[in-house]
Amino acid sequence: MTPGSNIPLSAARVTVDVAAPVRLDVSGLLLTADGKVRSDDDFIFYNQPTGQGVTYRSGGGTAPDAIVVDTSAVPPGIEKIVVTASPDAAGQTFQGIEPTATIRNGDDNSVLATFTPPQLGTETALVIVEVYLRNGAWKARAVGQGYANGLAGIATDFGVTVEEPAPAAPPAQPAAPQRSHA
Image 1 (cartoon, rainbow, N blue to C red):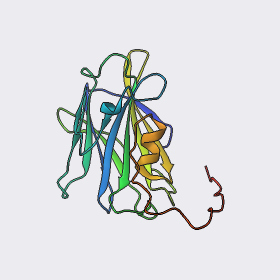
Image 2 (tube, rainbow, N blue to C red):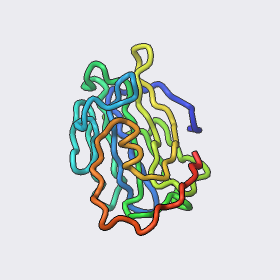
Image 3 (tube, rainbow, N blue to C red):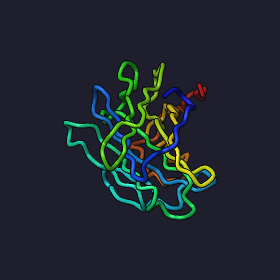
Image 4 (spheres, rainbow, N blue to C red):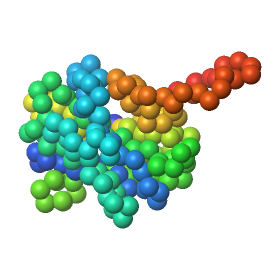
């Protein structure tokens, strides 16, 4: 697949695994038509591995982590499940460790599509693939949207409450404004 391309899903249950040369944190977010989660319960990851129709599956360090979507169990009102990935190591970017998402039939494990986002650099988190409902049919789209502010940036964009650690001490001087390279 290429960025922006999509495929119809031929199976009600699909697995999206995300592999890279380093350990990744993979998660899924269930989104409504407005592109937001209904609550923090719609953020599926290793510490909250099950949601309505969406499950996190650990690869145990030897296989890629995955998000399993059972489209027949996704609740009404959820129109999109985004699959995200970020390097497990703090501060690690995707430079040189481009991940590959493999979309598989959840019943027989056959490969439906693969996607490797091109030209990654300073991104510390990605929305790599989305599974979405369009005109009553489920599809998958290659996204590859990077974030420089990690999984917290993705989660916040989609309406998840992210608890930030308290700062150790106030800075001695105000920091210079940073430019966004969006």
